[in-house]
Length: 283
Image (cartoon, rainbow, N blue to C red; front, side, top):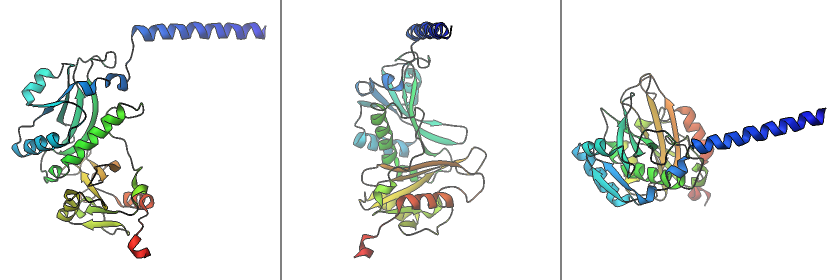
């Protein structure tokens, strides 16, 4: 009796499995990797903002750095007209309710989610700047943000584990940079009492290390809304000035003045991972 019951369960499982495959064939859901497969053959439309200074920086850095697909520039009116066209990808700045602008890469197409290779897909978005009361430092780091987008896409074309809608929390590379000091702008720190290897500097010094393309240092920077609030978040980056490799990325909420940027607990975690080694001191 028991053996007959087991045979019945196996047969039922086979029937259900076959039915599942048939249903999947009728309404196939395409993976991100499949939907991105045409990326390098399609033109990426870089949408200009209408702000002269920002657009000048965007044009210059895209022309210098964009390597992963053909590209053209367009204005917001062109974007509104073309965004449902699956022939294009779009790189543009999108605003959310917290008052932040994000550098967003989207595949154009219809709105049928995941059921067509021609449907819209938000490939990645990364924080770019506050919409109001900006410091202008986003223009310093725009080259790194563009390269982070490109690296994300390149890895997504071969990986099945990359998140679709944005970067994940990440600190996997800090242990590989123990001979490099990390420079933080004081305005991006909850405290400037830092351990060895982590340097609190003024904005100009930190930005200068990045602009110099230093091979011997990393630079940390924060992107966040102009004021604290219920939706306010700090987006904290550590990048290599020479290669723009991403060494660290974390997001955290903040609701009080003076608590944006890298928190005390983050600094401790960064120190544990980084474990700075001063080669000169050893000699």
